Structure formats: C-alpha cells, structure tokens
Amino acid sequence: MKIGVPKETQDRETRVAMTPTIAKQLKAKGFEVVVESGAGDGSFFSDSDYQEAGAVIGAKANAYECDVVAKVNPPTVEEAKQLKAGSTLISLLFAATNPEVVEALAEQGVNAFSLDAIPRTSLAQSMDVLSSQANLAGYKAVLLGGAEMGKIFPMLMTSAGTIKPSTVVIFGAGVAGLQAIATAKRLGANVWVSDIRPETKEQVQSLGGKFIEVDGDDSVDMAGGYVTNVSEEFLKKQQEVVTAKVSEADLVITTALIPGKKAPMLITDDMLGKMKPGAVIVDMAVSQGGNVAASKLNETVRVGGVTIIGEGNLPATLPMNASELFAKNISNFLLHLTEENKFKWDMEDEITAGSLIIRDGKPIHPSVQSKETTNA
Image (cartoon, rainbow, N blue to C red):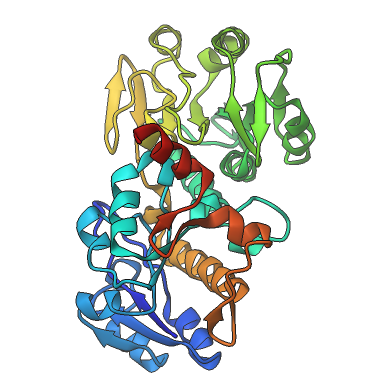
C-alpha cells in the first residue's frame, strides 16, 4: 500500500502529515511512502531526511496517485479532483461545514476518513489529532499572550520592591484550556478558569487554577466531549459572573468551540471596555468566528488599551512538534484501520464507523447524509 503525502497549500500552514521518523516506521511495516518535494520544508524536514527514512520524493501528482493520501487540512475542490478513484483520503475534513469538498470527493469515487470525526474515547486517544494539536495550541497561546503583555507572569521580590503576579483568565477547560492553565501556572501566574461544565472543576483545581462558579443550566448539551448546545440565557449568566474577573485580568484566553457552529460570543464590546489598559486577549476560536467581539482572523488588533491576538492556526506556529504528533496520530489510525496493508472496513468498529465520511464515492456519515437528503 502506497501512502502519498502532498505539501499543504492552506495559507499560513507549516505542518506536514508525515514526518521522516513515522515514514521510516511505516516503511518497516510494509508500507511505501511517497512525499511531495518540499512537503516538510515548513516543519524543517528536508527531502533528504525523508529519503534517508526510506520514502520516495516525487511531484504533487505522484503523491495524489497513491492508494492512501494523508493530509493535515481538508483538500480544496481542485485537490480532491486529483485523487484517483478507489483511493483513500485521511485528513481533517470538517465534513458538515465543507459540503463542496465532500461532493467533489464523492464524484471522484474515493473513500474519505475525517480525523476530526474520530470518536474521543480512550481507545482512540492515540489517534486524536484534535487533542494533540490543541495541547500545543494551549501552550503557545500563553506564550503569545505573555509576549504582548507589558509585565511578567510571576511574583518577583527585588530590592526595588515586589512585583505582583499576573492574573490570567481562561475560558474553557478542554484540552487547550487545561494546557493553558498548566503553562500559565508554571510561569507563576494566578489563574482563574470559567467552564460551563461543572465536572471540569476538579481538573482545573488539580492544575492549580481557581474555578469560576456558574450555576448549571438544562440547556447545556454534551456529545463526544464537546458542548453541542447552550442557551443565550446561560451565556449571559456566564458573562455576568466572569466580567469582574475579566476586568482584573492581565491575560484572557478563550477556547470555546461548538462543532459545526459559530463559536459562542464570550467577550463582548462592553466587557472589553471594562478591561484595564495593557491587558491582552488570545482568541483561540477566531477561525470559527471568535469568542471575542473585536477579534480578527490572523490579525493582532488593539481596542482601547487592550490587545487582541487572533492567530487562527496556533499549532502551525510550532510545526516541528505539531507535525510529529500529527504524523504519529495518523500512523496509529492507519494501523488500526488496516491489516496486512489492506483496509479492514470494519463498520462494527466505532472508530471506523465514526470517522468514515465517504465509502466508494458514497457519503455515508450522518453529518453529510442529512445534508444530502435536505438537498434532494
């Protein structure tokens, strides 16, 4: 079985879906790996690194002619048309919000697995690219925020006086939020955390954070580790409770996402107006509309005295580690799906069934079947 690794074409993307280390491991298991020339440049992996690992370097067309094509980002419609019939795509796909890409893949008669649809279970932990990338993003968000702040994180006692520790407020205690808590605490900050899931309180406290209590709400729905629905009334209540903390914060990090929907608004213009000069916000949800009213995708803006960072692809700012983890996730996923270098197509397996979007050119995942039915 040949695995093709094309160079990522999305703007500001530096990651690659396969590293030389993982290519060597897959080669030892009987797979062939074809890498587009220059695919690893953004992650500091040269063509010669891949060749030494046993991979073949070729043109983009060579990568797309393989039995399996591994990518980080969803293909463009034009890239989807380069896949050969019967081949299998493994990448992030976000199928529910990319209907034109799903349609193009179906027309090509391919199979498509979406890495973002892998069930977030213990069994699938080693394949969970969303978690591995969010972990890095949470870490980098704190560093970016700290670089923009006009002060240090820890308390510092000097002969000239004592510097008080910075106050960091984090919205969301998922993978990214928890790593942000741990990073900010390691740097010496006081950390306050808001999450609409009361069960996260213990995790927050175990990392040294202080949990901002908000009364529960029956409108909060959960599925697969995500919040899938929350009422406007609850969000308003949350804003009222955290506004006092936000007004005292030196750094605010927002991480709230709802799959398939616009990110919830957490920091309004009114809340921005109450923040102190020199404060910084890192909006980690900016690529899905943002948690902050004034944030702009891939821009750093200033509103009054508050700096708002809207980096839309934080893992790509740590390309070496991000690619290493992503490639390992893909390798684990591929080995789970195959036996003796052939796909098992075991639809009784929850990982296969949960992540397979298209089979032999036919959309089969519930997230795209419903759209197909609606359009009929």
